[in-house]
Amino acid sequence: MGTDNKQESTLAIYPGTFDPITMGHVDIINRALNLFDRVIVAVAVNISKDPVFGLDERIQMIKETFVDNPKVQVDSVSGLSVDYAYRQNAKAIVRGIRAVSDFDYEFQLALMNRKLQREVESVFLMPGFRWIYISSTIIKDAARNGGDVSDLVPPHVNRALLERFR
Image (tube, rainbow, N blue to C red; front, side, top):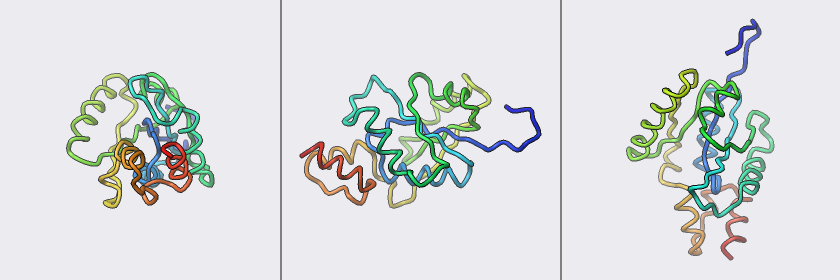
C-alpha cells in the first residue's frame, strides 16, 4: 500500500447500518482496536433498509460514544464497503459474527469482497458473550414496545430511543 520506510498505522473499516449503535458494536470496535491502530466506523447509506434514525443521527451517536477515543473515526459510506476500504488504504474490513447464521452470509460477502479487492482482508470478530444475542433490530423492537434496553446501548442512545418511541 505505501512504499516509504516509515511505519504505517494499520486501519480497519467497520461498516454497518448502526441503527442504532449497540454495546455489541462497541465491543467489536474495542476488539478491533486490539488488532488495528485505527478503526473507521463506516455508516452505510442503505436504501434497502428503512432506518429509525437518520444518517446524521446515527453518525452523531457513534461519535458521542467514542468522543474520548481518537483512534475511532466515523464516516458515511455509500456503494461497496470494500471499495471504500481500498480508497481509505485500510488493511481490513471488520465484521461481527454472533451465530452460524451470521457466518453463512458474512462468508459469502467476504469471498465477493476478496474477488473485488484482493488487498483488503476480511476479519471476523465475535462480541463478548454478554452481547452475543443482541442486534439493532431486536433492540429497536424491544424499545418500540416499552422494553428496557438501557444496559444494551450507550446511555445517549437509550435516551434517543426513549424519545423516538415515546
